Image 1 (cartoon, rainbow, N blue to C red):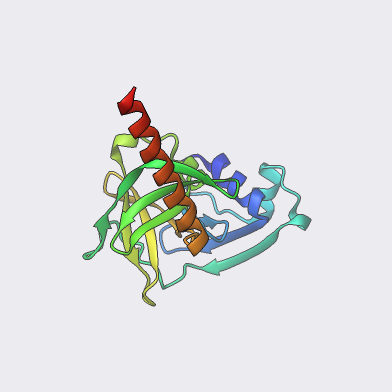
Image 2 (cartoon, rainbow, N blue to C red; image 1 turned 90 degrees about the vertical axis):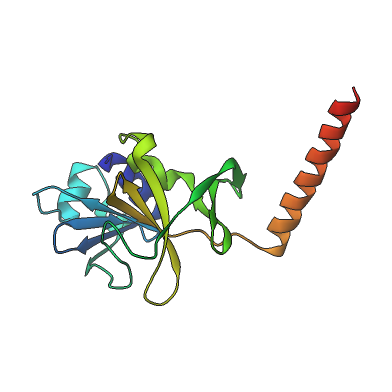
Length: 180
């Protein structure tokens, strides 16, 4: 796990949440959370000093792990997701689509940066649901849970119209290629 990549997410959001778990602490920027499996107790002051973060410019919270998520490595009804072959930039954010039971859901690609040191062939994404019925993504390295990411709700009528217009333009371009 690349802690510096997690710190970048936290700096960008200006929100640092340290969740206290039974076996480890988790770092979060409010959209994703990552376990820190070290024996060192992480405090906001330690983290900000170590990574040159101006603590006065951050919203900082220390909390217990939310009980709405399941932190087990394997959950009975989780579903492994297939990543879309197409990644897009939407409103300046690089997003990746995953085929879910609810159609397609999107995640900002930057939330996968902390996993950069892991073998991509063992990295998998699963669809899970909170106790209140909200979908979230459980990211695993082999069979071990290494992160939780909330999908971004970007699907609007305008977004679908833009994607549809692009698909139509691609079909026209393909037809033109075939005719040449």
